[in-house]
Image: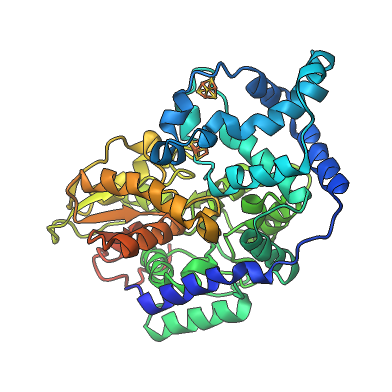
Length: 451
Ligand code: SF4
Ligand code: SF4
């Protein structure tokens, strides 16, 4: 059960986030040179091909929720790469001397203008690339732009504040080991065993500030499922935060450091599996982009909790009660899980086992519309009106199914759905997948004998 008072407190905290940021005083020349250095370093062969091969067909615009909801040409996906493209064409492409005759160099004013285009109005959802006839990876280019702007000290203040907190104190929104312990003790008081800081475990569970502060039921539900399966698992207070503000802000060093905290704890306990909470961007950050310090692949599997739960149900290891509900539900595929990560069948396997009436959205799965709040845009205050316009596409898509409830498996999506629902007085229930599954455990999550 969501405490709406806590949700409103969280929204209020976001309104003041920017005040905590400490922008780096840099000259315009330094900002430009730092941004360009990142652009040059990151323009590998694949990105160069992407920058050179756009045929301006416009298909990507039709796929982008920010363009679709505003019809504003400035939100055309391919345009979001224009600065990167201009730098590449003028300075590193085969015909650079020729391009220098016709294309002006980029300026700090350009970088400042592009801040809105790559943070507020791109969730790096990847939907545009699904329709691009040239296969251009716009989300990757946008992420490179975020890295360039981060290096130039031009991250939106809200994201800058949280990234600085995570890089400095190691906390996010003030949540560190003490706050985790408090949440764990609150759940233990409800009779839910939560192993914390066990020295050895087969499974390491990672949680996130959002679950600690707001969606504790999701953490409780995951614990009940792991306990029910009889797994030897643990949370680790030295490495529990899934949210990676290095990835979201474009600070590559912080992204690596935040991932290394989790990796170090997983290695310390000897985990063979790391389970991530309902957090979309945590999945690419740890599963696809993280490596051991020397560059080797991670020696353990990384699963999103929706992927884990669906897999356990499909294998028969996790039994759930079926047919005791008359709900009509639909499912929202989080972009980072479904489109980027391929986690499509597992959540559906979990929902199918519950005996609810399930209705797909149209389009769905890897072509599903983004909710508009991912990649940190939910925290950018000035982006709220634009985000809400994009969310309206999502709302209409869900409404068309006639479902009573939409099941989600990403806390960022859940926040954006809640904000949209609050503004629109939208009656559809927003339900966490892991909570829904835990509510259908045969014995309400009583532990089995250890496996
Ligand atoms: S990645 Fe998503 S939000 Fe960004 S330009 Fe493409 S469709 Fe739009
Ligand atoms: S769909 Fe691809 S080729 Fe067409 S305008 Fe967009 S990025 Fe360019």
